[in-house]
Image (tube, rainbow, N blue to C red; front, side, top):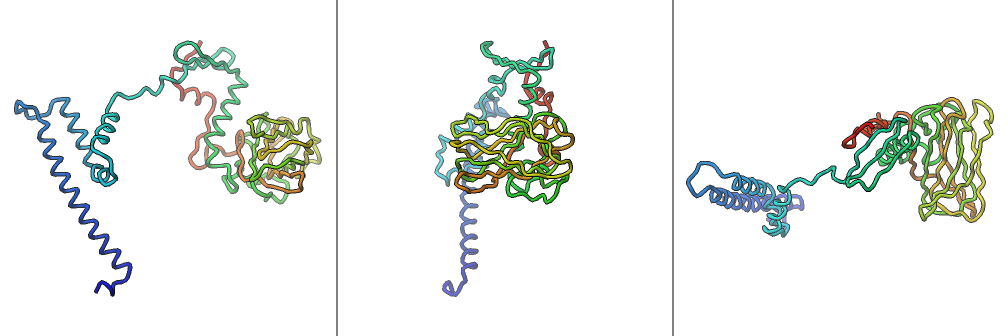
Length: 317
């Protein structure tokens, strides 16, 4: 009969037998648990446990939910007891190492760490940059890949897919138009000695202010800086930036001053061209902001004030 069973039937019977064995083991452990809890009562015959014994009873009850699995995984009762003791101990302060935040009359902030020996002051401009960095870090896992939310940085990763000049969701656009400094950072599959960077500007081109290579040691190398030719209004264009010899990288940052050209300044793709002729499209991309941010994938777009309110002990001077 066993020989005639198919594999699915054999697996089903084996599973049922294993389930019965597990249930039997759990029943035995539950009886032992009841006996231990009964022994925890006060010697005077009182009806309820003392506070200390109540704590012990809670630990035992907690063990009941995971004791069988822990025993099967080889965790000793001593280690389980130590873990429960650590969980039931005094909570570690979540704010002990975090700074107090004070606002300044000019709209900046000062961070002061406990102990009085360390502080950091940020001007309003620096605070804006801090806000952008926080936002970019929070959003990065969701929006950096090709095919992400509309106008997200991921829309600038991969090959260009915006056919004509216009405000299309298949390109990256910053959170606001004419807002000033913004950036788009792109990562490529391989490091190469860069010969050229080609930026596909699909809407209102001409706002690029700087192109930077991110170096392997964490530094930056400026590839181009200046003011673009505004070009012909109403036309997309491919802006080419020639790079001097000897610069190798797999990451590029395109910086923009969106106040230079009215309207949203959108980028569809950025091509990295090696001196060996190899051409690459970005595999992922991040940005200072993007249009529609905070409405995609449940993510939150923080303002400077909200970031400060999220830190403890905000004070005014």
